[in-house]
Length: 225
Image 1 (tube, helix red, strand yellow):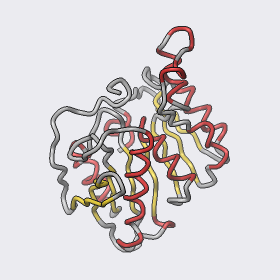
Image 2 (cartoon, one colour; image 1 turned 90 degrees about the horizontal axis):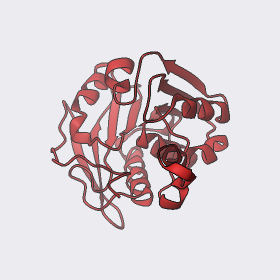
Image 3 (cartoon, one colour; image 1 turned 60 degrees about the vertical axis):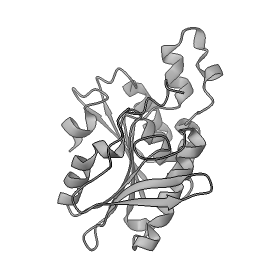
Image 4 (cartoon, helix red, strand yellow; image 1 turned 45 degrees about the horizontal axis):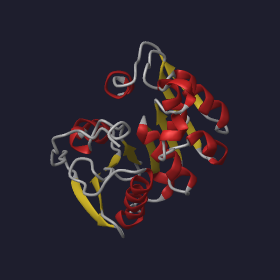
């Protein structure tokens, strides 16, 4: 519902320098992604955004990443931006997998695919990693699971009762067998940095970068890029 998926109201047609909007059919709805190719030999960053964003807000991110020669695939969630359908854990995973399945057709192999997820998107990136996509993983301000997050906000520990969408990254942590970096702000009051620490402890070989003075919503633009 709107508590978990507060999609932005106004839908902007996504645009970025050198980018094209892909509409990829799935069984239920078209998956929407913004694609910009890499320079030869460079990686493609597949970015899964947070829950109050849409890919139409992220043209600046494409420009920054492409400035370093990277390609970019921004994956939209059903019900967000110009994407039809309604958001749920299942529908978001379906769109994410469909977009990733397009990369080999675009000439991008797994070794050059980096999965990046911010906040809600961290749960999407981790799930795609367990399905065998990508070769590196960056989780920005990740939560252990939605239930854990809601437990922190709802009295009496009733979070799990209300949450059908679990995005339970902690339970998948041991299966994440790729190079993984977790970046978390020490002033994050939405997703406590302890969740990032716990995931870094549980994911084999993961590296934790605690960003001093960073909160939740300023991590990407103010502190990482």
